[in-house]
Amino acid sequence: MEKLPLTRAGQKMLDAELRQLKSQDRPAIIKAIAEAREHGDLSENAEYHAAREKQSFIEGRIKELEAILSRADVIDTSKLSGSIKFGAHVKLLDEDTEEERSYQIVGEAEADLEKGLLNIKSPLARALIGKDEGDSVDVSTPGGIKSYEILDIKFG
Image (tube, one colour):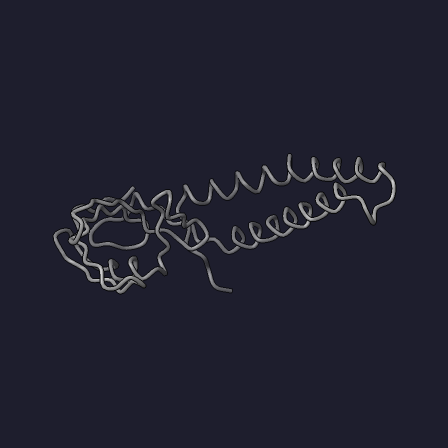
């Protein structure tokens, strides 16, 4: 089975979500289903069907998180240095707009672009891997070619 790279922070985040689902969300939805059953006819009981749907989502997410965590390869990024690789915090300058952006290159399971967590399999991350401060990279995006200058690389 393929190992999934995760940072320590990513592992903690997924562990916390799993604990929340198992200890709070799952018992709450079981209670909601029991209460909805008490309202009688299940065929026309919207509360019951909504609760069952939510239960299905919760159980699916629990299975997904357990699978990810069982295959996790937790990498201590504080011991890394040098050119860009998994775990790097990278500050980029968009050469077209002069806008600065910061990302951390992380595994697919913890990626969240809104939080600056860039999936290692994304076109931008693949273009950055192996590069150093001061280098420029061109990335093919749906909107065309984007050029970035690497301003800073940190690990930890």
